[in-house]
Amino acid sequence: MRREVVTMRSHHATGRVYRRCGCRDAQKHQLGSHCPLLATDPGHGTWTFAVEIPATTPGGHNRTVRRGGFPTADEARTALHRYLAGRSIGISADPNPTLEDYLTQWLAGKKLRLKPTTWIRYRDYTRNDLIPALGPIRLDDLAYEHLLRFTQAQLAAGRGQQTVWHILATLSSALGEAVRTHRLPVNVARPTIIPRPAPAERVIWTTAQAVRFLDHCHTHDPDFADLVELLIGTGLRKGEALALHWSDVQLDQNRLYTRWTLSAVDNNQLVMTTPKTRSSRDWVALSPRVHNTLDQRRHTTLATADPTETATMADGFVFSRPDGRPWHPEWVLNHFHHLTDQAGLPRCTLHDLRHLAVTTAISEGVSLWVVSQTARHSTISTTANIYAHVTRRTAHQAVDAIATALDREEQHATTSRPPHHTPHQAHQHKPGADDRVTTTRRPHMKKAAPAKRQKRPPTCKKLVGTTGFEPATP
Image 1 (cartoon, rainbow, N blue to C red):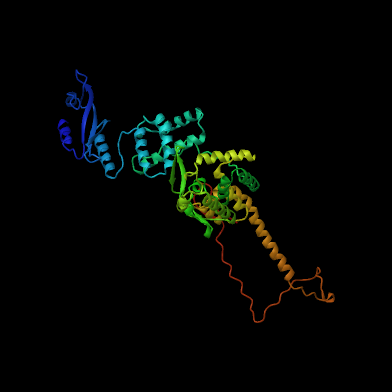
Image 2: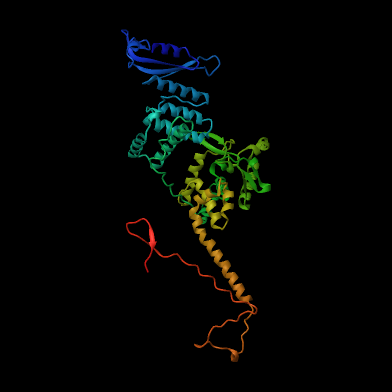
């Protein structure tokens, strides 16, 4: 046994497997692999593997990764090979990481691929909720029961069901990546502990309420009225409208381009990111109403701008502060609620103005495909699912249109049909009881011979207690 340990220690390039224990000497120093009991007692101590990892930076030092606690040499050797195989394809196959270690590494990798706002949400759920409650648990030991107790504790503490669901969805995303990289066999967060809660019912203004709010804004804050006109008239998202540059607006072609979206990270740092989906980065048509709004705003901006900065106005924001910085999303939402309260209207979000634009278009009879393209949804099914309540109302318009078309054609056919020839009354014959229905045979037509009747097999009955059939008795 000792000879095997020495042999495995000599292979530094591929790692080594050895046995060690927690015994200590008189000075309370841990003996590790030098304990004399290891040579005499095969059951003493546990097995450990160690592998030397090259430095990741120039001039750095190599580091040694050790993982122990394996009951047999074979299990330690298997874990070592698994770890080395994982490193060869760029994934971590650490056999004994805690959930905190794994989630920390997972977050670091996600930061390079996610939008800042999405990553911040993942970070907050991970650091504030998952790691404090489940972090010490080994990744391989995480079970459904842990998540069930966590969910029950969160709901008992007064956390909203929607918030708890998002926390579990974040954990499910992390564990799902571990399954895809063959780090875990299954994702214990799927299926979810609680079903996804139904979204809160949105408050969608009527067109009369929208006109009332616009009249109020034009009187008390004309600049903000321009933003609301743009949101309702085009269905842009709030971040897309706030990130709009004058170079993206082409009034001569009655359209604008959505190239960016403005977001606030941690509610203080403004960042410009790409639109929500790939199909969102597209051009949007402008109605005459929105065209006039932007045209007047451009002339007002040119008239009030510093003559030395007029040449650079094309690179500026359509909605900006006096210093050229864009409007802050949080201020826009708070100001919108303030004006809504002043106008005496029910509160809604700025994103609800996008829903107002789409529902108005569907209610006015615009086809669902055209509405989906205007809203820049990824698929038409997205539009149908979100606005199912509107399509149910307009479904009556569709069937009514079909009925109207059929009625119109029937009326047209009745009025254009020639009058029938009515024979003289003397030649009319009323059928009586003695009348018989007769037919005339065409000339040179022979009556077809009747088909030969085939003999039917004798009727059979099943014999009780037997497995066969026999002809039935007459």
